[in-house]
Structures are given as C-alpha cells and as structure tokens.
Length: 186
Image (cartoon, rainbow, N blue to C red; front, side, top):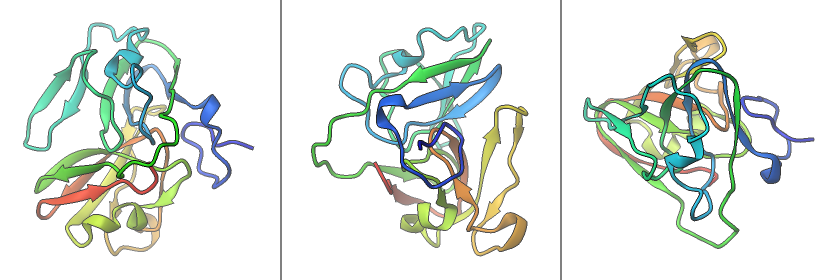
C-alpha cells in the first residue's frame, strides 16, 4: 500500500512512485524530501503548460517572486504553479545520506511553506518548532480552486490543530513573530 499525492491515510510511502499531481488551474505544491542533484530545481516542471504564467514563490516579506527553471525546489518551500491540464510530475529523492534537516526562516505575517513528511501529520506536530509563534494555517484545494478551512493553533473541531497536512501540498502559515521552521520528515 502506498500514499498517493494528497492522500490522508498513514501508510507506507513509495519513494519510487512519488509524483506531484497537478490539475487544471493553480496548484500550491511542495516536495516532502530533498531531491537528487540535477533534478532539484524548478526545471522539474518544464513539461507543464503554464498558459504563460510564471511559477511563483512568496518570500514572506510581502513579495511574490517569479521562479526561473534554475532555482532550487527545496523541502519547506510552498510554490504556486498554474497548469493548463493534468500532470504527474515524478520526483527523484536524494539517496539516504545523513543530512541536517532543512530549516526555513519565517517572517512575522504570512509565509508560504511546504510539508516535509512522507505521511500525513497533524498541523500541531508539523509546526512544533515554531510554537507558539504560528497562529493560523491553511492549504489550497486545487481540485476545487479554493482554500481549505483554516487551522488555528490551539483550536479543536473544524479548525482544530490536529487536522492533518499532506505530502506534496503547500500551505500558508501566519506567524505572530519571526521564527525558524524545521522539517519533520525530510
């Protein structure tokens, strides 16, 4: 049994069959692990018809950046890509050498982040390295071209922090103050 992109069951992850699924419209995506050298840039999306849209990265300081094909595609980065069709973008993960887990400096305010585990995990556990600085988090439902219901730190129920985040997805997180997010599974 494997976890497909966007799946929510906590089962084994098949590294050899891993792919980012893109649907028509905007997609907010990430890589759950480091990618192998030579396949670790935005060039992995070269075959996608973006209908003239740039691949976008939000830098956390209130600026959007158009990404070039040479720029790194790293864990903890949530990127936006427009697809003029349906695509499966295969990913080649870096071999198992021991490396320091990735980190990402988050600014006060909104930040785009990626999810870095191979199985879904609760928002509270995913963001434990920025506790108590994070306040609100939400993802993007590409199939519906709409935002998910927000997840609020300390909340239960519909907005509860125990709701799961998933591999290959990007998320917005609001930070009450700057802090450094560490990967949980990469």
